[in-house]
Length: 177
Image (cartoon, rainbow, N blue to C red; front, side, top):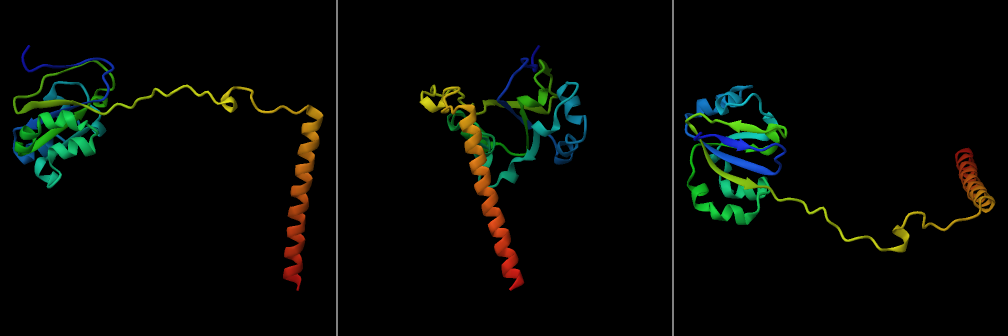
């Protein structure tokens, strides 16, 4: 089926950019609840993960700059399409994968909506080197026998109590004088 865009289940970190070949009033209408989902042929979309805007709003930064700096797309991906992105005029539609809530989806966009490009967001590298410090090992804190630990806690508590009482007495003396 031509014109069908398949979004696999569980897709993450993908941004799809569409050109809207329509009048500004029609593009503005797509921001109404349910309108965009209807023209894309889906049941629902998360509106927080969808952007519709005129390319002219981006002024000096341009669409390529918005994708790299605003959406986290690696610069190398955008550089391949820079000429095409700079030439775009009118309104564009940007949809993040999260708009589909992880469900497998088939987009069947209306004739005035055409896919320009698919871009991947920068992914976080969650791998870290193993921690080898002795202090990071479980139960590595120095152990005191229970009686000695209680004695130490009482001593610290008594010192703190004495300091607070001394400060309170000093405050009363300053106010009284």
